[in-house]
Image (cartoon, rainbow over all chains, first blue to last red):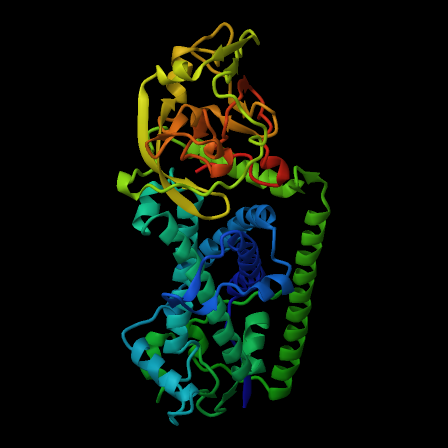
Length: 241
Length: 270
């Protein structure tokens, strides 16, 4: 019997949908900045597997000669990115949502099971829960990456006033590499995230907009038979009965 | 996005009477419609806000609201600023010759013998002239710091010169009339042909690592690197390291700045 259960609180949905365009624009203005000294590549010695970024990419997206504009947008939107992220973390702490999001000692084993399942190598069904181990690791990592971006960003923004931070992150040039690598990390996260959202389907996607999910409930026992429950990870044993 | 929802709690797991499927689906339709319209409106508001922002009048190459935030950031970092925080210094063996990245202000020939540093007295407006020997007579400071270009690259360089703060202590030309202990709020520097010009806040100008520099990597400055005298300060991007100083003047309003007029942050502070 179909029932409606709450999944994502309103605040979390706002944080999510504010972050998406803001982070996108941070990456975009970041590319305008990066273009002015585009020295990173994947490769070794004289061998370059991939250059960040090929000239065709700059030309196709009109990236060239926008350093000043890029810096202006970057140093304005950084406030929105930072404040939205800070409010998100505070909200998850005080609302108790962190219980669903933080990995625990089972998460890593479960994450491997999820990966094998998603690659079609494991047949057993996944745990029926708000966030599985792979999600917990991914969503916690991406928040830590956000913190890393803020810190490495500050390290290259104020390398004299915050010289201790810049040194901690390996110096001015290495902090810039960290800042760039984290950005590539967001793009990879985004690709996997979109693929997983598409796989998970409409019910799951709608929850991040409207907040609820429709689940199948046994009318006799009121137990959720399919679809996630609101049980935190620590209560996984309860739901797997 | 428009509805209130609460965190799932233990209470929700206790059996309540189930709703009929028809009622559930009707509620789902209603809430979905509201939420997606809400998200759509929020998206439109975002796009509208962006459109408004970019349509604002320009202030030196960027939209005014962006400029205001850059200036806010500058005020915030100057509130945090402390003279005792020094840029890291490196082993001298790591020093390299930096790329010559701009020749604005250096295009005419310069006679090093005839060159004079012209400094305008803040109190009287009179101009005083100095030779390179006058600058070299001040205590010589050597430091190996990172020159950071606004483009994103950096080079460790060994600099030699006199502290601007020592110069201003020896020749109190920035002193305020009536209260000689107080100084003007800003320093402006220009090349002899006035083609390149930068502005500095006084605290950065007085920082112990801000030098009137005449040596690079142990050699007198070459023409391309700003002979006979240039500014070096690890508190600012390379854009502020004016080469071939012609004139120094003091003011209480921000002196004009070559790159700030082209959309860059005036402060460009580190």
